[in-house]
Image (cartoon, rainbow, N blue to C red; front, side, top):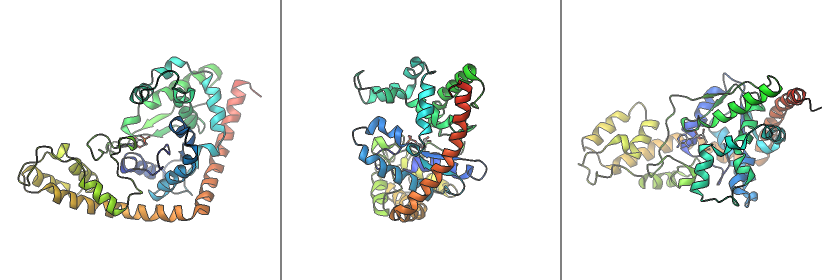
Length: 322
Ligand code: AMP
């Protein structure tokens, strides 16, 4: 994940990605990278914020349940082989492929960037992302439903490299956990750092309460007795995720106009805070002990670098670049 903003993850990242990683760590060798170089695409003029943000993201990985003894937790910039492989892959990646990537087009349009403002790095983002994956000769990449398409270009680059120089890389497959939902933000759009609609793991219990209070419910439900539509109500949707056993009763009451939105919000706040409290406590402990966190990141970078060195040997041999 990219450490943009403060680096704290939100509950969309937690439920849409991290929970799945935590399950996978027991069955797979995993490399969990905080991609601080990728953050440069938008934070190149605020680089001093990236280091602290990367630590917040790493702390959230661990607070969310990743075990640094089981998987490698590290920063991309601590493993310089990411840059070397990126350079080599960039030589076999047609610019046309990159210009057609939907997220690149969306980013250009949403940020209204002209040719002079689009950096070489922003266009090349998928090549660096491909290097992040292929460096570990990964067979599988756990991604959210919203990101499955991103992996297609990585597969194409791997195929092209293998065709030119011989089989070095497995084609990475997207692993999408059917159980994970796209988490809505407070305004009903997808929860995202960039929409100002997120509940962060760094938010205190009071901030969570205030944010839930401001969440969109059913537009036409003005009084307690008006019927709600749980399928499009943010509060009901979050309740379904965090109260999978008990949400139906509250949904039926909402539908029949037997409960008000205030009650739903109060209950959701309680449920959310109960679920987030242990994560909040753990992230606070980790960030209060920078030496321990640096030691974890150093261990992760060492594990990653060992695997990366092996891959780079195979790459240089295949390319006859000795
Ligand atoms: P991003 O912060 O958009 O780069 O996403 C990091 C990871 O979190 C990706 O695997 C996304 O699929 C996942 N993710 C981000 N936002 C959401 C959301 N609202 N619901 C579910 N998953 C999400």
